[in-house]
Each structure stands twice: as structure tokens, then as C-alpha cells.
Length: 413
Image 1 (cartoon, one colour):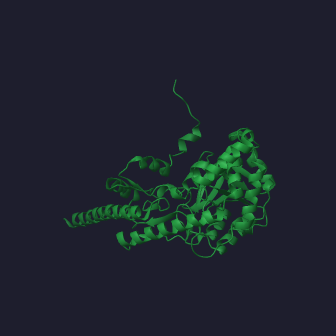
Image 2: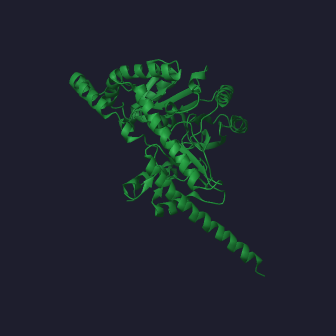
Image 3: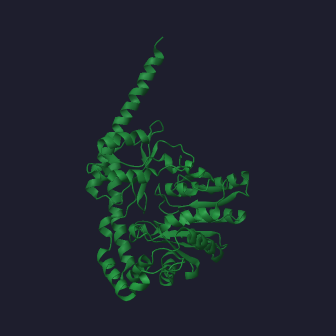
């Protein structure tokens, strides 16, 4: 008998980024695929000491079931950090600890979305969020964006034209966005809150990269500006401590957190007790702020190395972002070129990256791609962008020859 899966699974594509990460086993390949924090920044000694202390002092607790909401000590520490570092006034009972912020995104779809509901998102946006939402078969509406973030006037126009009873939420990554590296202006954040208030539309602010600003002035999180209780804030220790710990959180109004808790109870009961107590113990004696500053310094140098290499290896008709923080930058090739073809050539030259089209909710924009600089030392960045430049010259030359051939054919009587 043929195995039959749920119909909704037919519309969920494999993650282009996760598939690319499988290629990293090739020793000859330089991958700019995944937004991985620098391996050399993991606090191995501090984590080892904290783990030993947890097992010695609280071993039975660490190996036992815990509450769905998360360990009280960790929720208290997260609330304090949100207040001190982000200016977000929250309390431990307004926080749910999750298995990374990806689980928080998945739970968002679980508690908000019915089939046919509308999700508004930036164009482009975080690929894994799109795939998490697609499980619930919503209508994904991408809103145009520019260097200042989502063009909120376009969101307002789209809202006025749609069935507002089906408009469920707007999902945004306002700081050093994945995939573009762009950061929203303060004006756009305030405009979004105004539109959300008029339509009573929840805003999901996904903020995994915010603390990785390495130049320029800070801009308040959208959550810190919210006076209506419409913003749900997602964040994680993945980029400032370790992604392998799988530890994130949701912060929101109590009535919303209650629904997230119910969703999580059905998913995994609770996040690993040992991991929660490990990070709690680490934070008691570890200078996380200094650690984050070290990550920023490493990422700044690597961003500079990639920008310099791109300026050296690619022609002026290739546009790219120059992010002031985070892990990524975004390339736009001339409109007639296809980043998927560039990837095929890149693999032949020993370099990999994710094409940009999957980051758009409704496809298109085949001439775009994302590059991650965070986990590659500067010599490897220079070598990899050199390979990318060689692949690009091959692709552009082929495209020019094809255009020339077409022109010649057109003149033949």
C-alpha cells in the first residue's frame, strides 16, 4: 500500500540553505551558504565549567522534566537582558523558552494560522520562516522592501485591498535582516506600529542578529516602541552563544504567551532542562557582553574582507549591500542573469551560495543571491570570492555571446 502523507506537505520545498550545507563535506568547496557564527568564538572552557557545576550541584534537576514555560531562573535572566540591552520592558511570566527561535516561528504558525489566512512579510525574507508557515497553507504576501526596510505604505495599501478577516500577522526581521543584511529605519518601525494598530494586526519581530551591530547607532526594537501589546518578539542564544544549544525565546503579552505554551506542550513538552540550566549557570559567571563584542569584532573584519573582495572581483553592474551588522550580504546581478546558473558554475569552481529566489514568498528575482561571511576566515573569503568572480565572468560572457548570436540571427534575411 502506498504511504499517504498530509496534503499540506506537498507544498513545502526543501530548504535551499540546508541542502547547501550538505555540500560542506567537500574539502575543495568554499561555502558561503549558512549564517554560522564563528567557531573560534564558542566559549568552550566556560561552557565546560558550567556543565560540570550544573551536574555536580543540580544533576537530578537537570536530567528531569521541566515546565513548558521554561526554567524560572533562565526566564528571569532573559527578561533582565531584554531590559538592559534592548530597552524592552518585560517580565519572566511574559517569556517562553523555546528550542531555538526556529521553534518559536513554527509555534507562531501553529497558534495563529488557518488555511487561507494571510501572512505579510518582507520581500525577500527569512527562508526557514516561509517554509514553517507553509505547513499551515496560508497565503504569503510579500511586501516590497528597500534599504530602509519594508515599504509600510505598500503594506497599508495591500491591507486595504485584501479580506481583512483573513489577515493574521506581519512577520519581519528588522535588524541585519536575513537574507539582505538591511536594517529598518526608525521611521519604518513607527509606521508599521501605526498600521498594525489601525488594523489590530499582530507583528512578529524576529530578532536573532540584533546584538551583532558593529558600526552605526542603534535603533530601538519594534517591541520596545509597542504600546498596544501587538508585537511578539522572538530571539535566540544561537548567534551570541551557540546554535547547537538550540535555545531561544518568545516574549509577548500574557494572553499570547499562554497560546504559545499550549502549542509547545503539543510539540515537545519543554526545552531541554539541562541546556536551560547550563546557560543559566554560564550567565552567572560569564561576561556575555564581552563575548558578544568579540563576535562583533570577528564579523566586522570578515564583512570588510568580503566587501573588498567583491569590489575587486565583480564589475560595477553587480550591486550588493554593505550591512552594519549581522552575518549576511545580498547581491543583485544584472536582470538578465540567473543566480541558479551562477551556482552551477560556482560549484564547478569550488564555491557555493544560496540563490535568492527561494527567499521571496512568491518566487521571482532569479538574479539575486545571499552570501554569509561570518564563519569564513579572511583568506578563505578572498579565495572564495575569487572563485565566484571567475564563475561570474564565465556566466556573463556566455550571456553576452548568446545575446550577440541572437542579434546576428535577427539580421539574417
